[in-house]
Image 1: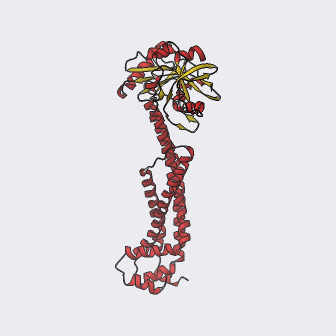
Image 2: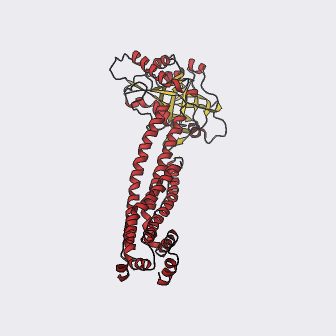
Image 3: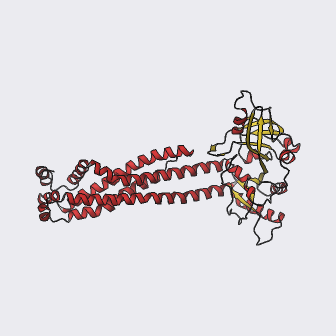
Length: 440
């Protein structure tokens, strides 16, 4: 920067502080564009990593909450296994992944790895508990399904007709299982959307009324369900429903069931109904006071709350790891600014000799540091949003935009610029103008 330029800017405009400091800061950044970009790289990576991490975890949370909601409102899930305290679940396999039915399938399959303890009689007794509007036992098997030349393997679930309401299933074609189908143990089946596609995708005719073979047993299709949704290997639509009595009479005559689902009349009575069911099952299973229960009870609301808590913890962990990049970026800004102070010592001396105050010098270098961090933060947000959309699409998650996290990441980037720019700026302002002018 020539002495004439310095004289014009800082001699004639001595009374101004922010204007010339800002202009000089921007000119310096433009003159060293490559170095400025490399300096911002740490901030860009840090902010981008935060946005990607938040996008992925928020997308996962939205997906799981959506799928929990699709199970039905005010639903209690009773599964065999380790017990729980009254009104709160103490773990379980509700959210484990698995083929053929997402969360609902995992509720039904929880007994696969624990001691079986629930029976159809338990389900019928639960149906008489106060505030319980409907109940169904669930007994399921993985079966080979044949329809003409089509052949597939899927989950077959024996349920009461109440499952339609409890599970919030909607019919696309035909009809749902009826009470008469259950009483007469009719060999009828309702297909999930994926099961229908796997068996009848090549046929233009409706599958309703056609015959399928489940483990060699003939069943008449009476209905097809609307799509509920799928994510990766977990698919709620890859399922076939048959009457519970038909399941026990033709496919699995076990005296135990995989799980029981019960719907409560409203949200305010979920806890009291849950406690009443626990007391009932403890009496039916002859569990003495102080002994662990051989079942566990969870509500859809508890599952959603537990998922949100776990994902919030994961979000904080990932953001904390990503924030390390912001710290590294701040250190990089400080190092480059210190180098810049050393390289421009003579320029600083000339400016002071022409009337620039120490606050002018400090402000210029501080503005440079803040500009680097703010621009880096904006670029990091854009790159993070792009990366987040790519990653969520790749793993089948919804793209969830969090403006709060975006604002926080940008604010932290700005603070990083201020914090790590103060020392170089103060060091530049403390230079002795006489010594600075003598510097080659």
